[in-house]
Length: 216
Image (cartoon, rainbow, N blue to C red; front, side, top):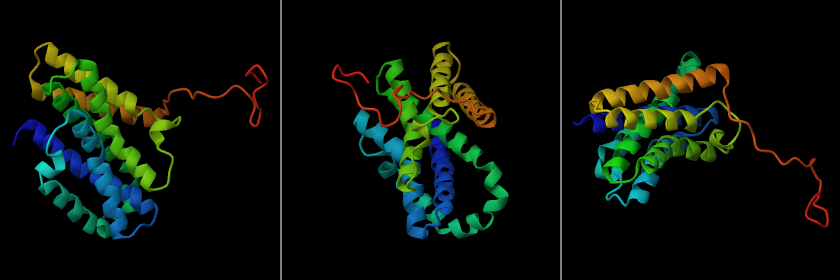
């Protein structure tokens, strides 16, 4: 198994666990848990593959991935039973899953011949879009789109670090490891100290309507 495939499989497991914990907060049944876990684990990578016209989709080409997610969902009752004990650890699978998927997405996009910037953007999509789908399925506004601890910014930074190290001739395994450490550390620090981007708000007071010249 290549390093990228190992990282991708680990990302599937970690993201599925995070999806289970999201669904558990909403009190979903096993079908709901599986649906959310499936979306979180495969959503970002599926979008990446569609953009890159990769066939088959990564989880279809690796049919054991859905089986792993299904098995984890079946064990969700056992996992959730210890939710109180593991709740403080929730940020870790979130950060780790994002890091692993971001770097595999960046690597696959770069291998497909995209520019560095496009590869990084597809890596960020791979690492974050599954969480967006999970939030939507749980009827929550995705945290990616509102002022909250930095998310996509962490993925963006780590993806550039990975490509930069490769450009400098650092071996892929070490470049991947460095990218993972940067994303996870950055994300956990953002959660710990509540680092966030400023919100873009309409300066008009709520309920105000534009005047005849288009201004309020």
